[in-house]
Length: 125
Image (cartoon, rainbow, N blue to C red; front, side, top):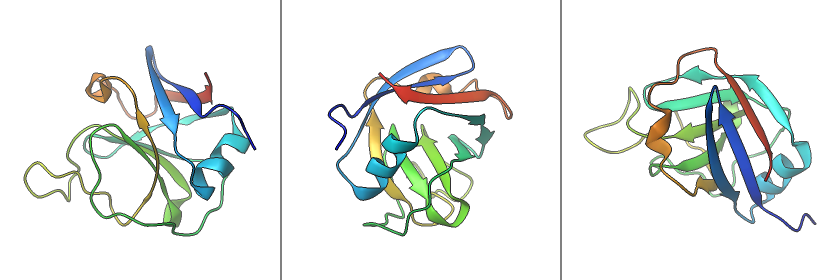
């Protein structure tokens, strides 16, 4: 079992502190770190494929600003910082249900200027 669940997420020149929860999916992500990929934007969400395969685990169809999640259909890590194209009003709605695996500990909205294709790196803090 990993003792620290604190991670650092770097997107372009923005660095965020975050913490993973105690879910099985989060444990699998911890074991796969460090991960580096090209991030894609979908509204106020950044997502990218990661080398983790996990089944739905307490899946959620609405999340909060700063939530970190795993999207099982795309085997993708997601960082939510505002509404997506399928959100209604101020809610934050993924494309389909996700496994919430953690939370950004600071202000996730600093990711708003991020562009498609920027390098994203997740590593232990």
